[in-house]
Image 1 (cartoon, rainbow, N blue to C red):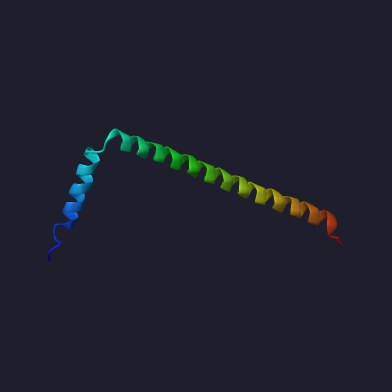
Image 2: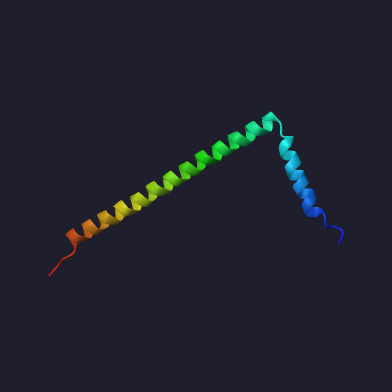
Length: 72
């Protein structure tokens, strides 16, 4: 097996590269993180509003069908 140290090499690269990160990369990662949070909040808000819209349309449909349907 010639790749027995592959996992430890990858781990060493990950841990050493994190300590060598410059300020520009840190700022870029922070801006990206904030951007993703904003996008997730927007998608969640749109999803909640969409679900509320479906509930309102369903309630109005029931209200209209009660007025239209003939009950004996």
